[in-house]
View 1 (cartoon, rainbow, N blue to C red):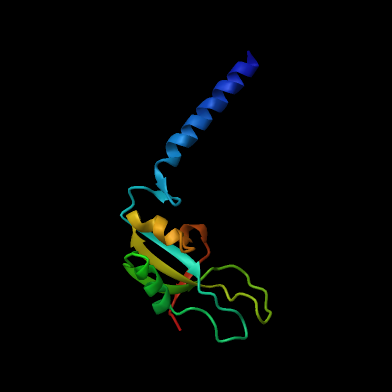
View 2 (spheres, rainbow, N blue to C red):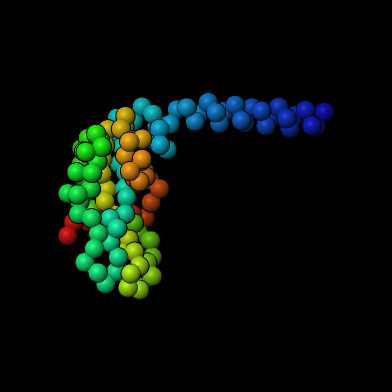
Length: 123
């Protein structure tokens, strides 16, 4: 009898996961009218490197993603101090919820994945 209960609970859990998976888009509610996403700017320490916020905005727009807002920030994580290592700088963009998947295909992720992140002026 115990095996049957486990199987039923497991089946119910699996069914619930399948049901709720259909209600999200890229980790965000499917009905979200706007989504805030981020991606590293590609900058590394000791070098003048990284993509500008203007270039990031253009990349999204060329891919058909409307950019409602764009700013810079920091991922909030500790970074090793070593030339050639990542700086932790990120680009934060707000896009229509229906275009999240297109932005994710370009490497963007929900900003909520980085709870320590902060916004700061672009350089």
